[in-house]
Image 1 (spheres, chains in turn purple, yellow, brown, orange):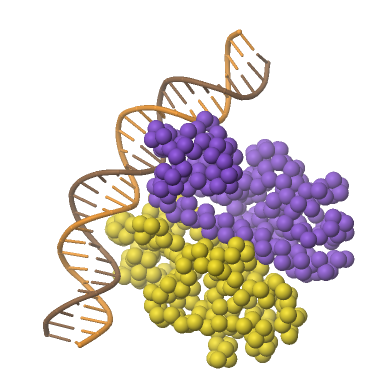
Image 2 (tube, each protein chain N blue to C red; image 1 turned 180 degrees about the vertical axis):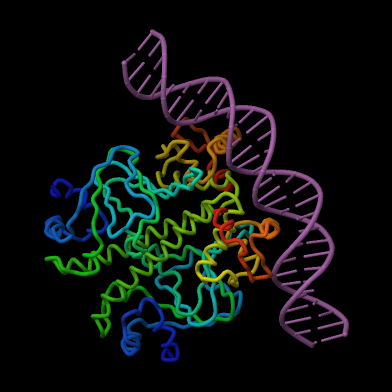
Length: 229
Length: 229
DNA sequence: GGCTATCTGTAGCTATAGCAACATAGATGA
DNA sequence: TCATCTATGTTGCTATAGCTACAGATAGCC
């Protein structure tokens, strides 16, 4: 059953430097669990007890915060071979600090962290490597959050949008690109209201700096966009 | 010279589970550097090349972001035995992503990360422990940032203040406590303007929920404060 | 004691963005 | 093809918080 997902697992950062045969060999030690979810299923609720973390095998999940009033902040979206919950798991606080929902039909593998810090698997040399990989992964994710704070720090919506669009431009290396979110999600990502965001996007377009249609954006004046943030 | 700081290092999370003699033994391998700074000295500029991280030995440092207009966001303040820069160091991006300044006269120890991932020191058993400690530390810090995002997410200043004061109350376990920042710094921490914050603090006080004088705060109505966030 | 720095509180004005409500246009499905 | 639903754009009103400027209070220093 796990064999089916080996190609995905091999692309996963925690197993970097390992052979697929090694991964397969150590799997029984981890006693992994695979679960399936439908779109919009709640995978994890805030406060759920945690002794494991997730690996997305198929589909996409959203990690988010939500307050009593229903305001949502998207922490991130994760697809095949990406991890979630590993930060809280290794901080060992014992419960999930964020909500996780399915953004599409998806399959998720859960790995308990007990076996990571207490080596017991057949390939013990690999143990050291697993921890070093995990240290790198967690650090990277912490850094993404650090950058994320930069977004949220910015006061004006114009700056948030400029920073976001400029980053998308740099990531894709293209002046025209598709963003991986709809308006509602982008607003939740930048932590602003959708109508206000649409209004500001319109203004920036009217100034001739960008153009857009739905999820497709084109930067017409890169310098102006850079000056905005 | 390093001997002088052993009591501080022993309290440091990376050496948890090690004897002070072990710490002393492995120090030559790390080729540590100790530097002194005066208040307000810039310790690290954004973009400085990074192959190490810092341990505060004495005094206090501030990790912050600053934009061209001089707006500042305080990421955190760190005192004796606390680390800074280890997240970026182990994410291996090669440069410092935040600015670090001295909040008082201070002494800082810098440890290169090369020796962490490539064991070579005399006490090699300890190597494994160092990495596991570091994984826990980095995860915790990532989690603090995750919580920090919760603060910044909140739209209204009232909610930010309520969340902050409530957390201070829970941390100290006391209804009266001193906050470790002045008004200007608190405003930069919550990412709001100082006058607006003073105004809102005054309102909350007028409602009989809190009382304060300078850095000393007293919560008079815990339930009301809890309801605010 | 008196001087100066810095910190904190206050007030008025204004710009920004939230919100609700509605309009339009794709997309989906019977 | 039509009907429905969802995503997106638009508008007006309003509340919030930013900003500047100033005033009072405190602390440090000579």
